[in-house]
Length: 100
Image 1 (spheres, rainbow, N blue to C red):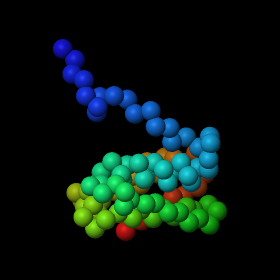
Image 2: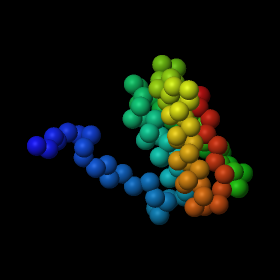
Image 3: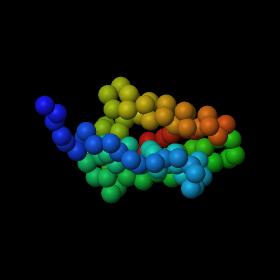
Image 4: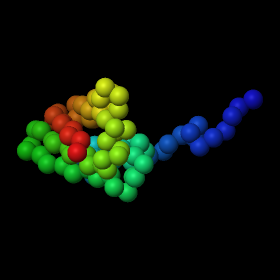
């Protein structure tokens, strides 16, 4: 007997960079993940700065959501950084994520 729930449905969100820049795709991906974790998703924002070969993303969340976004021993933050590194390889850039 198969169980049906919202979590079992496939998420069709596309983070490819075909319609925008690779930076936009990376920023949207981090924002999507952080909003899913946060109690106050409306207060999640991601800004970016870049100097060519290096992109700096700054994730801002409410103080009460920082623990969720960083995770135990920083595991969630490290996972987001790993995903960013994989995305950055396609564009031959470096990416840094700072969480405020």
